[in-house]
Length: 229
Image 1 (cartoon, rainbow, N blue to C red):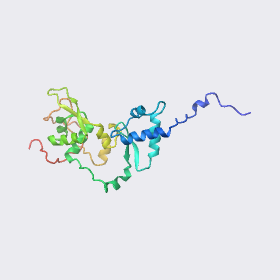
Image 2 (tube, rainbow, N blue to C red):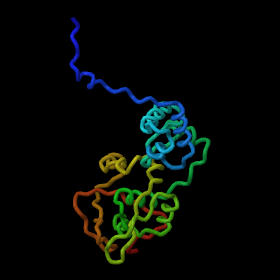
Image 3 (cartoon, helix red, strand yellow):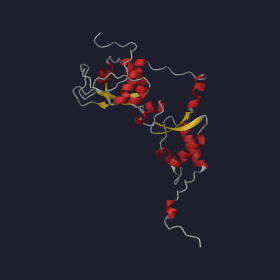
Image 4 (cartoon, rainbow, N blue to C red):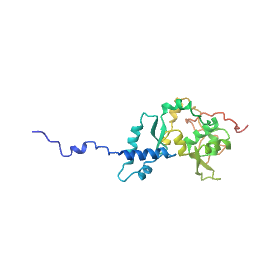
């Protein structure tokens, strides 16, 4: 006599994935192609018919695009179509690469990304260099940084942080995907020089160095004056 499985054994079996209809994939693909911003599951769900699982549709589409010239990736809190990374060298031969940021702008952007929300005075304290208005305007025009409110201290200085466009440009789903400090140090992008402190009362004349911290290495900015000269 064949032994029967216990009544609850079926509950342990993996549930089948919900079916994804071809027309749902077409809707998702069209939305992703037409959108200039990352598409969230919620935005896709609003276009799909009732009963369609947006997460399942995106997962199926991600699998369908895998290994092709255009792939579906997470970025900026949503999903977007992006050229496959291994084809970047080929495309650089065909398309003009946009003008790169100056070294001063790159260092300023890195400080904002890792210390946000941060004021202009705090950026200058970390770099040891006066921040030119042109550098900040370049980052704003590029869409990488934006105001994040004001610090509740005398003068109420503006604080700055990165934008969703920053995440999209660098292929990050969130700020949690920024490289860790130990990774930057291993790549030779960090020095052991302790930084100046960032606090709610930071000002340009603070020079106390907290021990044991690491900082992005100071670069010689182009066209900016060092304080004290």
